[in-house]
Length: 336
Image 1 (cartoon, one colour):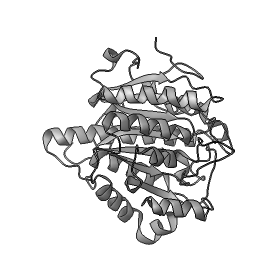
Image 2: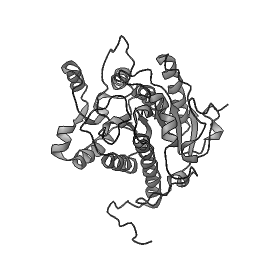
Image 3: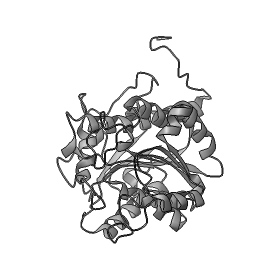
Image 4: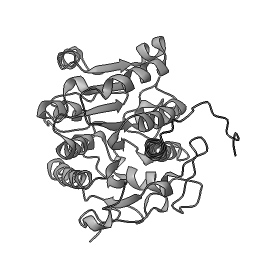
């Protein structure tokens, strides 16, 4: 039986059809399956991300009618590809290990069935089970992680625990699910991590782009470099978006805000471009904490991150089928 929403009204993402992750026949032809991960037991500062999935699903000024024609790409991701919503995984924030095990099993099952799992968090702890589940389905050590975040999330032990929202990337590397040199981090800034963790990251050959480098070299240059390098020697891309990669002026509803981040426009364009140009095999959007939001701007941004990814995936499928290529400079009204 489909679990539905752990918190709030039992709705799907913008009105897409339901599916039950326990019954494969309900999503066997799906391109993307949306999964809620309402967990914030790994936070180290402000909690509340357990309410992120319901907020991301619901926040929109348009009807929840299962249709979103994209102005620029000229695709309707909610119709041109099959997108279904499996509801939330039951995740008690007081039991991190049990919650992560439950989520990993669901993500692995969905990915093995041929769909792209798109997980709505939840704090960043959930990327550990998310990427692990995808790696088990696609190939152990055969995926790259493109990680948008203000923080590296490569800590080892925090508050006496190996598991938390500041440690998922280290856990993935330690387990072998993702090789260190297949991690690409964009948007890091601030005053963490300390030197010993930075040295560990360098030893793993991670590629971490701090905002000073991004500003000096140009965001487009960095993004193109990541797209070119990340796909080498892997079978797919896991895209992890921590909403705090965006400046808190545009995304205040998050647990550990850090000034000086990307603009909303930069993030949305990047997510779409990655989804068009690379084989995304899994994705999560994390750290949306509605209690700290203002006028729902963070929840709406996260909703649009999901839509840009879905639109990119739909456009990629269309391009591969027709042998076409998207023109980013195309005028809105040309050829209409």
